[in-house]
Image (cartoon, rainbow, N blue to C red):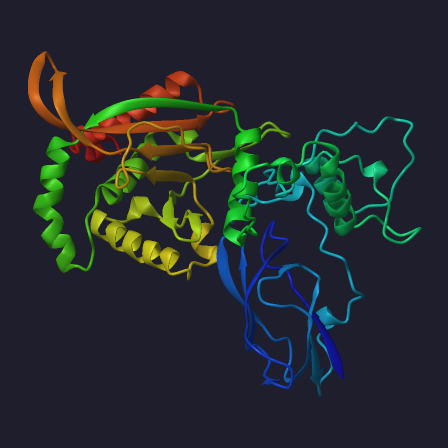
Amino acid sequence: MAIEFKLPELGENIEGGDVVSILVAVGDSVSEGQAILELEAGKASMEIPSPATGTISAVHIAQGDTVEVGQLTFTIEAGDAAPASQAEPEMEAAPAPKPEEVLVENMATPVVKEEVSALVVASAPAPVAAEKAVSAAPNVRRLARELGVDIHAVAPASKGDRISLKDVKQFAKSNMGSGTDFRRASTSPGGIRVEKMSAVRKATMAHMTHCWTTIPHVTQHDMADITKLEELRKRFAPKAESAGAKLTVTAILVKVVAAALKVFPNFNCSIDPEKAEIFYKEFYNIGIAVDTERGLMVPVINDADQKNMVDIARDLGEIAKKARAGQIGLADMQGGTFSITNLGGIGGSFFTPIVNSPEVAILGVGRAIMEPYIGDNELYTSRLRMPLSLSYDHRIIDGADGARFLRWIVEAIEEPMLISLEG
């Protein structure tokens, strides 16, 4: 019996991925559950297992292809009956959930999570009330809105059929020439090199666009004197190393932030603007932005409030290693309640980090510098001071709350005893 194996559901809000490697060839024997395809989707690498035992009779994709959920990938000749999930009629793609039906990570929390395509199209006329009805799935209509395409102007590939994702993309591409096409207009003798976006870059583009366009951002800045903290870090670094961990400023900040979130619960929540509801989270999972060759990733330190700094430092080392090796999984990047992005190792001072939706705040850290400082009416000739940048969602966090939160963090860094007293 021939089984047409279509790409299964990959995870919440993930509609497809890029083929990293095809692990089998025509004629190969496979067993049920054996990995036959490696994908990069939603910033994570994942292996897709065979649905049955049999022989690969056809491979319908190639390395480097972008495949969508529901797309035919392999044909497998199997002796056993096909699983029920494979006996369903062929579908173009799984319809995207309505915004109010999407869940916040592992919580039963409705939050809007939209994606934005890499294509950019000049503004198109909005449909008017008198427009005739069109037949298109919700995810197709959403793509059209994001590209600025009038869905009523798109013709299906076959007369009488529903408009597909491919129809919308083709319409967008064909209409890009109506404006200024930079590839044709360029007169530079050097020309232009075009590369296909990686799955990580596409996921970053979509998510950051959603975060920036849906969250009214405010960023506040402050400086923390880490002279005493750095002395303590160096003193206890050998003890951490003996436990297999590297005690870094980031590890210390994770502990500080977890304590601050308990004092300021409105920084550890998500919101549903449609229902005007706030979801306060009583767990403290801190996402850490990691710079990799494949792009930015934000793996999560779970239950940071229940771990000591050595445990956190060990976890940080492990997730950073996995991220840079391309071995990070979806589970490693889900469930965050607050994020930290530390650019101190590269350089720079203040910046404006983008809130990682559905979280409501993120802490940016710059490079610490030695400088003169006046504190408590005393002039210090040289103190090690670290720039901090707190971005937050102004729909749920007011400016005064942002100032209090950031000052609490600064004071906890300068006087670690505050964590034990109030955190």
